[in-house]
Length: 103
Image (cartoon, rainbow, N blue to C red; front, side, top):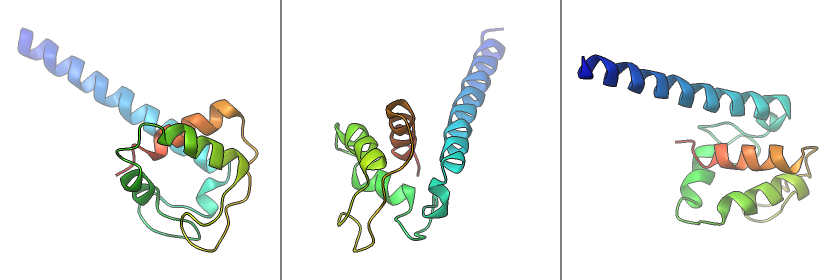
């Protein structure tokens, strides 16, 4: 019985994690982030998995990325600047947190 319960709980946790990841992908699509970025390849801007790898050990990365999402940025990934985005602070933080989980 414990094995069955453990399996059910693990499956539920997996579904919740997948739903959260999809929800943030949906937010990235809704906010037009995917016009310049992709999870696994460079488009105009870097692949999100490359961003996650670059900042994997930086405890302040989510806040820094959220600020860049809001204000835009230039130079960290080449000459093409990222324009400011029309997102709330909460949306920017959700996007930054999600980006850092991509692999």
